[in-house]
Length: 152
Image 1: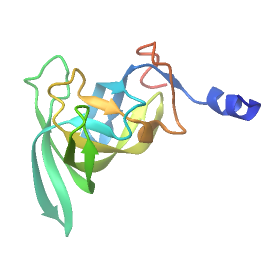
Image 2 (image 1 turned 90 degrees about the vertical axis):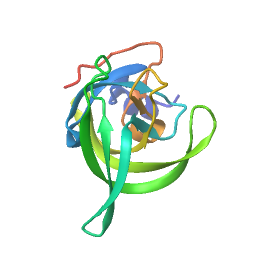
Image 3 (image 1 turned 45 degrees about the vertical axis):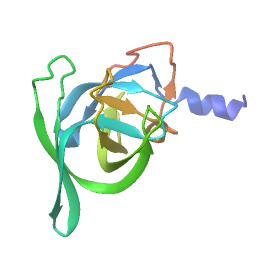
């Protein structure tokens, strides 16, 4: 590996296979996410998606369970639709999903990411962080978990 690449990687936070994040625009704090470099797109478990129009643009409202340990806690959120895309799920089936753009906070940094909204109820974690959201910002150590202080 060249010296330049090593210097670039040294300036990036190293994250583990599981980390906590905030999604402040959705008012979600301390959400456990599964880091998956094999997934292109990030996804968030939501229920009861409803499409509507606001100011001539397509929006969706949806329910989120922000606490992995309390599935009875449900909050209703809404976001502008950034795209609708066919995405291959972990079961290799293609499904049509809404994508939203929202702010991700992790390791004292924040940036916009795209999240596909889907049913992850069969998965252990409510959010999956994919490659597109991490590229150029984070380095992954898949053998570790919770390496970061959420606020940096």
